[in-house]
Amino acid sequence: MAKALTKSEIAAAIAEKVGVTKKQVSQFFEAQSELAYKQAKNVFTIPGIGKLKLVDRPARKMVMRFGADAGKEKLIPKSKKVKFLVAKAAKDSILGKK
Image (cartoon, helix red, strand yellow):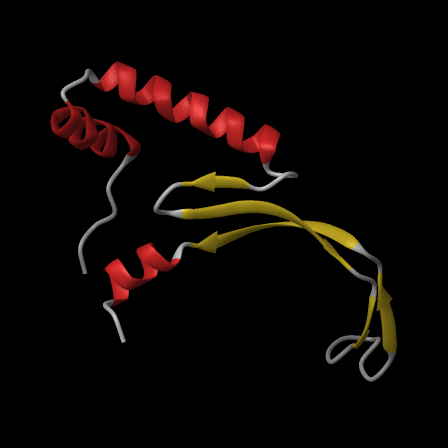
């Protein structure tokens, strides 16, 4: 299995492909991540890759399986989670069409 690219290697590859400097690509990554963090509550779309969104998870009951509380039912409080939904185009490109 191939080794994952580092941030620097990704920046170099994109800079070469687009014809800009690695520093400009790094600045773009920083600006994009800042914008994504601020907009995640509204849904932030990265075209061709997917969507980053904040999801409310309702309270739920769970039966404990291990430890001193094994067999007891516990209430898990509601919470907020960050989800990333992969775009169909990205899935088809990576996995191939069915």
